[in-house]
Length: 230
Length: 275
Image (cartoon, rainbow over all chains, first blue to last red; front, side, top):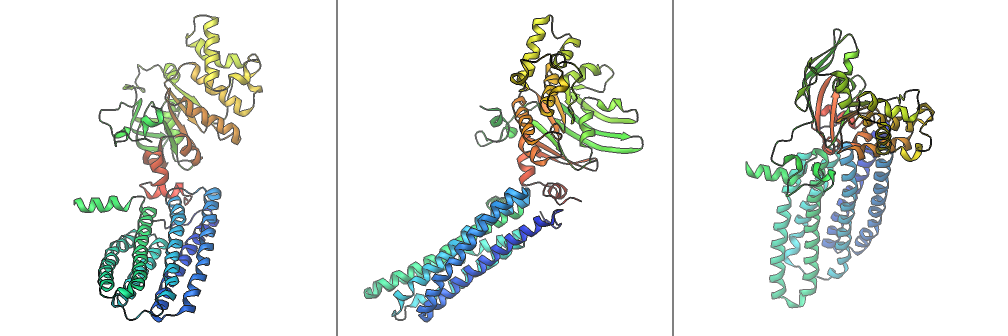
């Protein structure tokens, strides 16, 4: 259901706008962090990787700020219906986005360990996988800010592509490990990077479900079941 | 099982109680109720069932018709000369507007508590004893004493007044007066209790006591409450009806109305976007 009108109490709208802006800001940081971590990985940029790790603290701080604002909104404004669902979604989404930031940090931390890795073939697949996963994060947070349930469904549907990438990288790395046992350590690190990106896709999908519920009051799974039974 | 579980909150065997097979007969059934005050139509074709094991809340902006509808349920609109009511209201299947219905008897079966506590200017005891006495519910003084004590206990007032039953009812605090009025209503052993903004003139503590009382009375009586306080409707009711401009816009489980209303106007009203 749309919420086209403003609240009679203007300060309520300001609170909600501020909450949306915080989530958008967190999403922007997480998206940037993944992109940077992957760039540093490709270019072996140790300094850049350190900065990604350092910058993750911003996300942690924003998560705490979001939590405080949601609690305050519930206490002071007593939100109902769509407003309440949105406040709860914002609280949950901020936790998930913070987690996505942790994955970026995790990838960045592996950069030094891969510094002298030669050309490992799956490495060429990772940037494209990262691009899809971060685009999902970007789009799902747009969907949240716009209360767009359909856009959220579209994001969730893209998770399969990320999973497919993961499966194919997994197989390629396994083959690589068998062929070049002296590279197993580095291959294992790359496998973790791929796993982290796969988790980013999963989390974007979780956010999509939260956005869908906030916007419609119904669970996305129920809708997909209904669509499946038609 | 708690009454709560029987109603909505806990599904049984994967089904909510409402969806369980078998007909549920409502205590009161209103069909196509319209009310006119002279030329002005205050209520348009409202149909609602009131069940005896739950609290039904009527919400909506001023002038939406919620109090008008409540007053139809025990024919309080009869007292307004220009008011005309059409449609059918049944109490246990019986037409309450039929000529055979004794309106005094009806109002004993369907009691009402008003916004402003209105105790009689008599003793606390007499306030409660008056109804049972005129309806001949007690055969002697001892039985009347018991009814008064039980009613005051059920209204959560006994401990506060048992040592001063002969004091004037009007000397009590606002919250106590309102509970006295509730005791007076339940003294005649009603089946339905209608409450019109019962706590809006009370402070938060007295309000909480009234809400707790409503909670305790549920299951024994069918309760319908009109309230401007949406949080109160959310706290005390299991069903909520939203009225707007004389129409019933949405009627459903309270938990659905306040988390996921179906109609835009309900959503606008409960989220503070009305007007």
